[in-house]
Image (cartoon, rainbow, N blue to C red; front, side):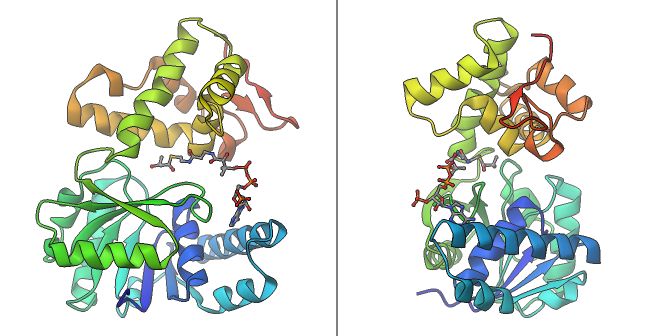
Length: 295
Ligand code: 3HC
């Protein structure tokens, strides 16, 4: 049984909104903190839209949606997270930004409050070091799309107490998710294996092995992946993948984590994938067609 009642979520982007949705749907009073009223409104609208999709798919009812939305609050003030029993951070992958927020919250929150980061590649111990509660600090890594993906990695950093890990595992289970334990190494379990796979697909494309569509088709029909690697890259975000690969390369200094030149150039060109309308596919067309990137 989880002893947690109030949940704070830092960041109302793709991951933060998904986490807040699942939290509110599981009965928790949930407060999302964003940096502007406009971003708060955007997060609320994204959550409402996702609920509509869940209703359409028969996974939720209109009553579930109304009940969950009534448990959700949005704020631009960190102080509104002071009474949270757990604060889950899902802001930009920037150590400075994350550390600063947790440093402030450390002063505001009670001694029992667990701090959790949804980082996919930064070191949990390094973010926790900004606070005086490294023993009550865990990694809690959700997967996109959060309402659909069952897995959450619960990461024990070097100073995290076993009690905190157990509270985090119980909380994750109460969200209807399946937790796995992972160590505080960059990429944890899933990205350690998934990131080299995705960037290998880019290398295969660069070296002319096959087309975008045929590599995607190959991995879907030949290996049973629900999406091919280029559709997945566009879905995760090329900017996000680039940042994660850079952090992992920096940690391990191994070539297999190094972002390929094509990925870097696409990010420079603003081709971030589905969210920007253009990545390995062009989403202005229905159905999307491969983007002509000259490879
Ligand atoms: N809320 C709740 N449930 C929903 C929902 C919503 N908003 N939208 C859809 N669902 C449910 C559907 O009812 C369905 O459930 P069922 O299997 O029990 O019937 C299931 O979710 C799948 O929905 P769809 O049939 O609409 O969608 P697809 O079959 O096209 O699958 C997908 C979509 C789940 C995204 C699938 O393509 C997939 O699994 N892709 C891979 C995603 C992936 O790998 N994510 C991880 C990325 S890596 C990451 O996030 C880590 C980060 O650090 C980079």
